[in-house]
Length: 86
Image (cartoon, rainbow, N blue to C red; front, side, top):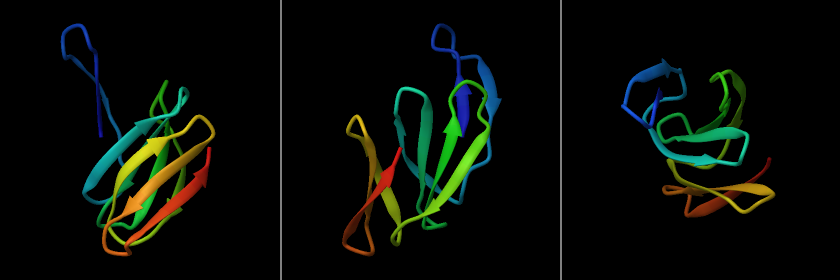
């Protein structure tokens, strides 16, 4: 995953997550990335990209959403949705 400066597109950092990241969400503090081939979600601190955790979800996660309290992840090959505590 790569962090860019919005004003000019300069690369501010590149951060390791799982295999084939598809979806991303911001919860106000952290970035959540769905890794479709790893069947997990990586939580990164937005300020510096530090990995705060990796959480197993269903098969082929893709979409990620934040509802103000929880992270929701769609699992394409499990026909399910995972709910993670922020």
